[in-house]
Structures are given as structure tokens and as C-alpha cells.
Length: 90
Ligand SMILES: [Zn+2]
Image (cartoon, rainbow, N blue to C red; front, top):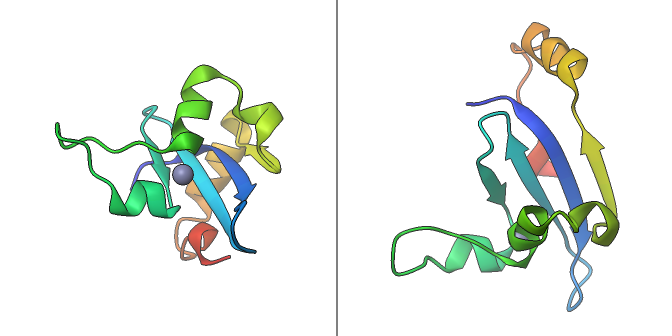
């Protein structure tokens, strides 16, 4: 499991759910919205409006919240690696 660099939180426009887009330190993205989890592109890749927003650099303004895990936080995560990751359990 790569370390998380940054997390954006979004509220759904059509329900009261909220979604999280995660950027890992290797620059890969993941999201838990239906667009990401259900739709796979013909080339096997995945994307969603949240990840596109991250790619375009507009996510910081458009998301409800974002948490930027700087290098210090990443070190802290390493020290806490024995605790389960709960970021997707919200
Ligand atoms: Zn998404």
C-alpha cells in the first residue's frame, strides 16, 4: 500500500454521500465514487470527475475539503503503520 500524499473530500450532488479522492506518493489516484468504481475505460484505466479535477489542478478549490500530507505527515504515517488505514471508512 503506497503512502498517501493528499486526500480530497467531495459531497455528492445527488445524494448525501461523500467521496474521497486519494493521491498516493507515486502520483497514482484513487476514488471511491461510483464513477470511479464502476466505470473502466476501454484501455483499462479509470477516471472520474474528481480525478480529472485533481489532474487539472482545480480540486483544491472545488472539493469540500482537502488534506495535504506533507513529508512530515508521511513519516508519521510510517510510524503508525501498525494501525489499520481507515481513510475510506468514513
Ligand atoms: Zn470520483
